[in-house]
Image (cartoon, rainbow, N blue to C red):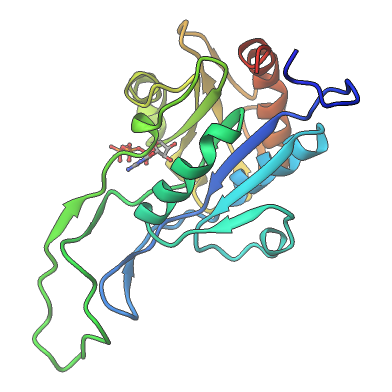
Length: 230
Ligand code: CTP
């Protein structure tokens, strides 16, 4: 078996966790960003590590002190940075937790050098779409991919089902918009066979730390199955 080391001990599963927002620059001062705190990704990273996994965090611009002291961490600012880090690292990992909140648009062309002054004519920003990252990631059959979806409550499951296919993920963790930047989460997990699991034991919503442990426990059997021949 390849998933043992030279002492014949099982090597830990390697998890790659992306988290936080991206910042797409307008000038050297301003950016297009979003309200993602990175908290859910960090809690999942902690839960996976507590289960014995090796966990690398790819973190966007968010201010969670625990990220700075994480042993294996790299930082990104833009979606392009994240794509580069992910593309370079992914083949060395077993599990991808794509919790990063990637910007949908960025300013066309290079960012303005310096600062656009307030007394200048208000700028008209020409935007272009940010290319899809997760849906274009190349994965092996023995790698496990978790995508996320942030949606209005009444659309969350239908949209997560669409994203499951579009993003080629093994499951989607779907959250309602109301829990953005909160300490709580109402996550549900949508699986390819159509079934959905919810936080019933917690009354539908719980602290992100508890939800992260629930997510890691819920996906671990499928990970063990898919990554058994790593
Ligand atoms: N994602 C990605 N690349 C993008 C945008 C999103 O890889 N350019 C990933 C996110 O990290 C997340 C999943 O796709 O795991 C869903 O992100 P979300 O923002 O909910 O959806 P979008 O694809 O941006 O679609 P929409 O804005 O229409 O909901």
